[in-house]
Amino acid sequence: MTAMPHGRMMAAMYYGVGDVRYEETDIPEIGAGEILVRVKAALTCGTDVKTYKRGHPLLIKNVPALFGHEYAGIVDEVGEDVTQFQPGMRVVATNSAPCGHCFFCKRGRPNLCLRLKENLVNGAFAEYIRVPAPVVEWNTHQIPDDLPFEHAALTEPLACVVHGIEEAGIRLGDTVAIIGAGPIGQMLIMLAKKAGASTVMVSDLADLRRRMAKRAGADIVIDPADENAVQVVRDATAGYGADVVIEAVGLPQTWEQAVDMTRDAGTTVLFGGAATGTKFTVDTVRFHYGQLTLKGVFHLTPRHVEQALRLIIAGDIDPSVLISHEMPLSQIRDALEMMSKGESMKVAIRP
Image (cartoon, rainbow, N blue to C red; front, side):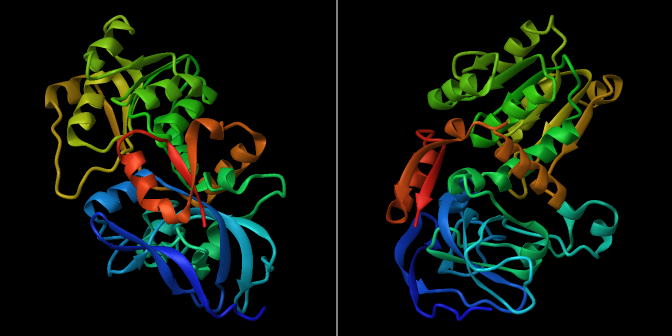
């Protein structure tokens, strides 16, 4: 165990909706089983934008609070009982970890771990971040010397996508429709193609995202402002609908649209998380007699994290599609505003 670098650091501090400030704060102290990572790259994501725009009762319980959760960096200090990591190691870690012992962990669903909320990590938009012991144990990995930190930081969101694609059950030759072409949608395109989809159709309002979807491998891109997305999907599939539809926006109306795009006996994956308290409706006749499969997919597991990192190291994901800008930490508000307006994909933040 090395001596802790007592002192101060610069960080993005969340004070409330629309109020994120670049200011000085204490370097986090670590305890047994924990590590302190010097952040080399942190990425913006849709959850950060939602938190910035409307708050997040799970991630932000008290203010001011550290902010951001996709990151990679260099181990600066290790706590007592940490043996698998040493100062100087290049690592990536996720924003949570399961306990490994609860009802859902024992049933192979660690993404639903009853203690997941206790192990959340927030604070990547800073010079240093404290990684809790469960995350160190389950979801922290050493990365190769030649892997850029911003590429490694894609591990957490990609792991969620790996989970979603696994649950989608895409088969060779399937037609897949994706609603939403943000960074998550782009990764869904890439992995749907790798899973064997012959045709991938994508719908998104933002011109930048539609253009990036083409680069990611989409065969048909739809502007829902000008076209009836459901009709386009049906016209391209002889009226049947797509074999698999994945919703990656998180709005009740696009959840319903996803069901409408799905063929009878097809699968709808509801990947985008909608706001608490919202509801959506499904035609019971269509659901029953059409033998639809509707799946909610949430978060990731340690296995998905390992798979995602291997895909990144192997070069199977194109980071140039997913990360469009790079900014210093002092411009974090500008980065979040750009992403919320559809003017950027992920922004790599350099503390």
